[in-house]
Length: 464
Image 1: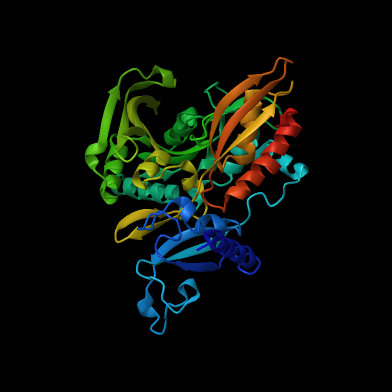
Image 2 (image 1 turned 90 degrees about the vertical axis):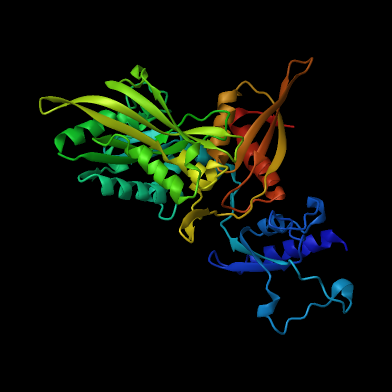
């Protein structure tokens, strides 16, 4: 009846098993209904009245990957005894089997010298020159979901290519490595530099930033359609709900309406209500800087998230001159990440980038098997006195580069100014991991030994 001892049993077991179980191994924990404290439990208890199995497992670097019904019928000699130390049986009806997988540790080292490497700019080697950018972009670019077989982006992009090839005779596929990641125009994208020249440019903020390069390929060939899947870079700031990189696909050629047809097809495949799709036409397209004639937005209402409407594609009519003739072609951009969120019912962009997430099928309907079946969020406050080196831009930049995968929200609480002239800031940070193990104690350790240390070294602040 002392539930803290039950938790200690689980915690000690997982910490011990960590030394023996490999990354391919599994641990199965069977608990009576309501004991685990997960969203699957039909008997809902207060959180503090459960064994907190997910949090206890996280202290041994294990994550919950699935939950199944406990089937006593497949163990014919099994007898449940020992309730309160006696001979009476436990109630096994509704019991659940929790399946855990081991993951690599978050921040295996908290040495400041090692942590500071996360803040160093990274070099992206491209055909168009080596580009130096902030580490948050370099680390995410190297984990490109387009080439991660089994990811939501890989699946939707593959389906898109197949769909286009069924309705268009000549299709050319362009790799992301064949297009520049940068533009010399001030497009609003993150700033980057060429390694050799140290000249400033911008990482592409949209695939339309490199449309001229795609047009050159299209003019040189007789292809009817060009498909170009690529990553675009977003400026990071105070909003941790927006990803540093997004996955888009550009379609160029004589294929007006192809993207809308594809999106309708995918809604039907996923058994989604097609009536939630809408089209918004617009004439003023001068802001995009090309010879666009008109355009339209393709929108889908997400009924599971307070009726939020997301833009999943744009289509433009473009006048081009090829071989001495002027033609009207179609340029479309599909926002595959937004489409993935709607089709797979994703709540956080980090779930799409988790390497263990994988598209599987229930009958003919695809769904995304998440890297973590259930992940817990922990909210902690951090307060520090200001220093001459402190700035909000630097503060948020450090959080992005050190902990972009586990910080889901940062809320400013207050600013205290003392009569002596010193100022103290207080922020509330929410931590949640969607692919690695994170317990409350681990979140506390990360805030104190990782984020706190880096803020003190780089900004000269004093943690209170």
